[in-house]
Structures are given as structure tokens and as C-alpha cells.
Image (cartoon, rainbow, N blue to C red; front, top):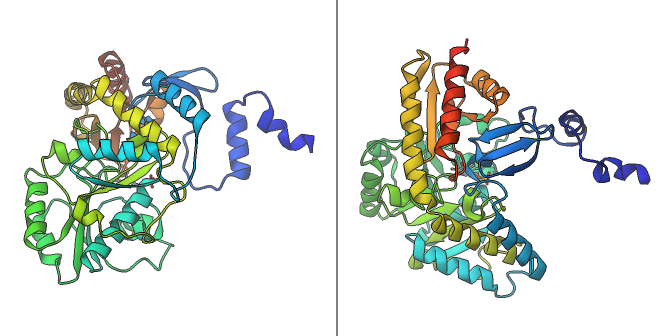
Amino acid sequence: MDNIWSNIKGESMNTEEIMALDRNYVMNTYARQPIAFKDGKGAVLRDMEGRSYIDCVAGIAVNNLGHAHPRLVKSICQQAQKLIHTSNLYYIEEQVKLAELLGNISPHRKSFFCNSGAEANEGAIKLARKYTNKGEIIAMENSFHGRTITTISATGQKKYQKGFEPLSPGFKHVPFGKVDSIADAISKETAAVLVEPVQGEGGVVMPPDGYLKDLKNLCQENNILLIFDEVQTGFGRTGEMFASQTFKVTPDITTLAKAIAGGFPMGAILANKEVGAAFKPGDHAATFGGSPLACATALKSIEIIQDEKLLQKSRENGSYFQEKLMSIMDNHDHVEDVRGVGLMLGMEMHNSCANIVNSMRKQGVLINCAADKVLRFVPPLVITQEEINTVIRRLDEALKNFHN
Ligand SMILES: Cc1ncc(COP(=O)(O)O)c(C=O)c1O
């Protein structure tokens, strides 16, 4: 019996040892980079061997406050000493405080709390169907909404669906950015349009000018709900707390997760009072949803975003970063486009960008590829201009050596 604890309780492991254990014991669902981290501070991560990396992934748009933010860490410790979990069988002080705060900072009044983005989208689909008493959801091609059966059905990319059929019925897909194609797809059975304001996994695809406003008008004219999947765009990523504020369009339902609690797992569905009232006791639930620890952490995380003016930083450093990316674009023929908003940026290449991701990692910068050809930059909102300069210098170098 002593043997079973040897790795678990032993000295900290090196990367090779971690990779070997992963191969043996973890299901092989992730094409992981050959790296594991020991600790982090701000926008910098340190690997098991002590090398430092500027983190432009932020746990895929999750660690908006950076790593190991002292106020968030303190809040988690303090709350854990009081209560981690009770149950939604009872009232929860931290949950009602968070719901009130979200009611004040978002375009919505009512909240439901869950644990992930996929779960938030599943719940939003249920809410839209319950409210409208209709079944059909119009979603976008090239979208991403999660990995459950229903959210891969909502997702407009075949690669996430293949092998997992039968899919959930009731989804139609139309091209992102074209209001006319949505108008054509609307039927008597349409409950809602589901859209990411900026497509994230699809390759940081920006909505064309006026598209989201036209979409809102179209939904209103046809009595259809508009659902914004803000799982990736929420909590300052696009320069305002929510992308609906960046683009000045108010949806009927918003889904949230990722950065909501600064890295602590959590998700939420927000809706106006009338739509939210469609859920009655027994309609929807989540054992862990809105626990004291998750809600206290989200409250602190939002407080830090406001105290440290991270929305302003996202706008200012986002523009700075984007300009710098543009400035090196001209040096490299294989860069096709630079785009994005706030600190949600993409650099599209002519070919797959996996080599650049590897080369950047070797130079101490973490980035990832979205949609195979797009280098995605979603750093913590606390990243400094000095760190951005370093990223740009190293990227310029990596692009010079890029052969494909
Ligand atoms: C827009 C969007 N929706 C939903 C999800 C799914 O979130 P989760 O992985 O927390 O289920 C993601 C994850 O990348 C996302 O980017």
C-alpha cells in the first residue's frame, strides 16, 4: 500500500515524469505541449525546471487577473476556512451577493450558476426553449459552444461532432456575419439565435460592423431570443466587462464561464427578469452551481477587475499589442491578417501555426493556435507593455525562422 503514495506524496516531479504518468493514467484527449508548470505570478508562468514564460494563453482566456493574484488567493483561503459547499437546497449568501453584482454590471437581472461554459450554454438552450415553447436554435458556422452532446450539436464545426453522433436535434447553422442568412433560416419553430460576439476557437473572428445590432433588430422583429455566448469574451477580455457592452448590443441571455472567478471553475447564465422567470423550481439544477467558494471567488475577482482598472488596461494594452502585431506583419509574407479587440487578438497565417507555437515556447512565450492557422493572444489583463514588447521581439524572430 505504501507504493501507491510514492508519486502522489513524493517530491515534486519533473516534466518527463509527469508526461510518463499522464500517458499511463490520463485519457488521451489533449494534444498537450510538452510542458508542466510549478507556479506563476502575474502574466509569467514557471515550469517544473524553473524556466519562465510570458503567458499569452491565460488558461485559454481564464486567468484574467494573472497567476496567484494575492487578493484572490487570500479570498479563496478565507472562504475555504468558512464554507466550501453547502447546497442549493438552502440559501447562499455569497450567491445572492454575486447575483446582485452581476445584475448591476451586466445588461441582465437574473442569474443561474453552474460550473463550465458548456453547462452554461446547455442551460441557456433549455431556458430559451422553456420561455418560447419552441425548439429550434440558429447557431453559427465556425462557432464553438462546448463538448457535451448538445453543445457540440450547437457548435458549427464538424470536427467536434465526428464520431459522437447521434447529435441533438434542433440546431441550424448559418454563416457568421451574415444577417440575411439568419433571416432565411428563421421558421415558426425558431426559439433563439446563439452567437459568440467574437468567435474565439473559430480563430478570433470579429463580427462585421453593425452585424450584432442588425441581428438584435432581426430577433426583436421575429420575437426570437438572442443568446450571446460570452464564455470567452466576458470579464474584460474585449475591453469592457462584457462584449455586449463593447458592441453596444443587449442580448436576452448571456452565458459566462472561463474568467468569471479568476480561474476557479464556474459558469453562469444571465437573463432579463421575464426570460429568467421561465425556469421554475425543478426545471434546472447543478449540485456544485453557485457554491459559497465559487461565488466568493467570483465576487473578489470582479472587485479586482474594477479596483485595478483592468478594463482600461485591456483596451489600452490591447490596442498597443495589436499595433505591435500589425507592425511586424509587414516583415513576414506568411502573415495574412491581424485582428481582434481588447486583449483578444489573432494573427492569421497562410498555413498551420503549430511550428510557431513550439518555437515561441522554446523562447519563453506561451501562445496557442485557434482554427489551425490563427495564433491567438489572450494574455492575463495584467500583462505589461514591457512584456508585450518581449513577446513581439520573440515573435518577430520566430516568424523569420518559420518554414512551412
Ligand atoms: C465561446 C465558448 N463557449 C463555450 C466554451 C466551453 O467552455 P467549457 O470548456 O468551460 O465547457 C468555450 C471554451 O473554449 C468557448 O470558447
